[in-house]
Image (cartoon, rainbow, N blue to C red; front, side, top):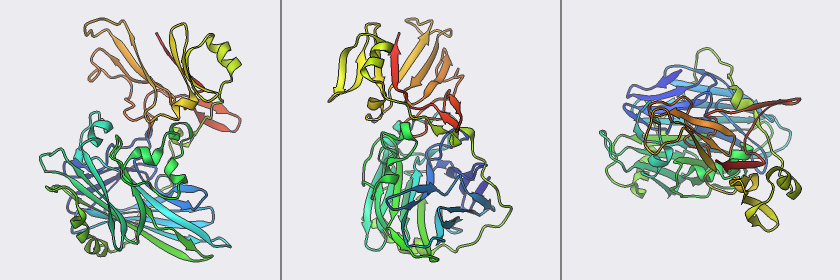
Length: 412
């Protein structure tokens, strides 16, 4: 399902109404194309300040035409309409969110727009998010009217030039962030809940390993029966020869005025939620000292935080990392395993990679690890974690996806 404008800007959506990718000619503006097994890198979150939040894409009824998309739903006493409008005169788009309160008391709200950024040629092959991100300039500037504005520039020049993207709030953005580690945080692998959605504001600039940017609209109070409109705009340029600067903000007033809202027509679709998306993450219990001795025997080179054990080695030898440490590191712990290991490359060598966030196997290969791949590759387990082999546990109250375990043992 696709939405496009006459200039070649293309939005692709999944059957569940989630945004899969954004493309313009040969350039993928977003990072990777989401699938039924991987979370989307783009969404809009409606938040009750100091409380809960909900994603508006991928979980709402939706309808679309060739040039527009609209999602509708209700959440905790709030009715919302989230619409996408593509510009007919430039490579730009607008997200417009209309919220109406059905509550009996005032409520303080805000919205956060999240967008992964690649600005690289479209490729069906493996995308290394870490590699792409290190070449992406990501800056936060302050505009007198629109607040925090994010500009991204691909410093690795492609055939079309240095691709560039601007994102802003048409109302006013109170804060922004520029890296996925800021939005998801270290505990995301265990909880499935982005840490930024629990914070008052976004933390600003960080050019790390995951080029995912976020904008927070200035919070507002909605009275009973009242309505509010939030708008985010974005503009893409195939070639931006110079580094981003405050001069780029001069285009904002004209960009905001350039959109004409058109309601999406067509048949309304009910979101189709993938099984891996609907399953909750199982919260594993911490092991006490007696249990650690029972399972692993004598422990050597024990790493502690106060009285809490984080990791240790066994006489095996094996290295054991506990869940408490996994949620304190930026990158997940992983383990590469090989069968029929040789000192020279051989087509008979099997290899696989496991991660301590519930990825039991990924990148299962025979011989050449690029061409003979038998299982999907978990390229960024800190953010998606749904590739590779996963295990779903059926309990009395529903299905749970195994995630960060009590202990992750790495050995021969």
